[in-house]
Length: 414
Image (cartoon, rainbow, N blue to C red; front, side, top):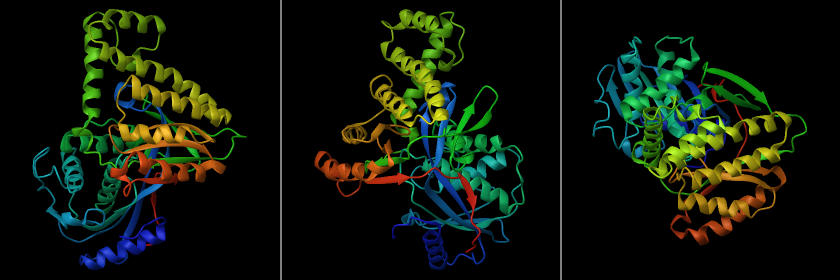
């Protein structure tokens, strides 16, 4: 498959896929869903923190059309060996079963299952073809796919969900309850609500979204995603699952000891943090380390948010770097290839900050870099990374991204 970098190229690929697999998609609607870049707090969603990030211009494009039957028929150009995913509405494999473990079809299966479970009346099947250029790991490909499927299946069934945050809940349920991935809501929120040129600030206390423009006078910068070429097996099979369990364990131990908290984000006061740390640092030092990352990351979060509002992108980058060190040393969620990317980026003048992205272990790192130095970063990675990680010399990639709308329906049809 040729490299796809824009909507027109994507439409051409979708037309070719529809023709090759005899799917009736003439005049089909095309929905595009973005990737995301989290500025804070990475791994904060399931710990109860506020969140901030942007949508980025790596996408999944899906052409879809009702087919007049109760059958779903979907083909992904990214996973051609899986063939045509075909099933009747109301008849999908059981959740978390071996039948779904190794196919991308677990996502449309899961969307149908969760929508039906939550009382949505699905009577119309659809034909669809998909293609995406989101790297696997670090930019939330699974959340982008799940959101695209939910919105498209609701559309063909004539269902409008007025509560946009409900779509986030549904997407999380697909991954948590059907697939078995213990993800939070960061990825879904940052994609579904993303606006071009804006940062998205999520407040879990009232489930509200605030759009935050970058302050005037900010130097022109780029978001660069550094794909290590490694394959992350999914959150359900990664260190992410262990870290989430550790954080929950820390909360339960603290509550049992009489501390009034419901999540790690409740530990905002220095005195409370020190009391819990003193009580448990000898008994469970690794859990205290996870708590320490969240505690410090929350303090950094509000500094970063104010810096963004003022256009102080250099400070945003510095905090992004500090957060990466915390993820590496206190949360211990990074990986060797991710840190190689960070080490390289850190040597390049104009790079303001860098860290691993997403669930951890494998996947991609990210950097904030002054616009005039983005090519220099790309060249440095292309020179140094293959030398350090020769096993991935033909698989790594550098993606220079813009801040974009999270969900869009193209004017052009198939």
